[in-house]
Image (cartoon, rainbow, N blue to C red):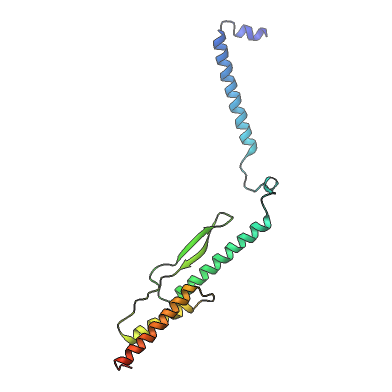
Length: 167
């Protein structure tokens, strides 16, 4: 104790408290720094904490469903686009999967549905639209509606040809 009193003999109590609080703050910052260094970044899931709420099998099953649906949607829409003449890029609707990535859950293709004035070209174009709509394995209701409408337009075109005696 003599060392402390000798060193701080001419210091007031307020000055001593001030120096003490500075040293305590420095010590506190060092302790916080050591805590952060001991924790470190985690690039894994700590299943010991979340084992009650986290089921690996469910996670894998749901993730696989997202992946399969994404693949199915992309294949479906690309099949439409490869058969018919499109007017814009394929449009996809996305949903975030359990792994944080975005997966396609829906999509659409805009086909060129303009009908030429010349009857033969119009019939050919309607045939191509119908093939593009029906050219997939799993038909959606929109695919069926487009194919039906295209078929009806072909019938109307043929009927108009009969009226004018062009057929």
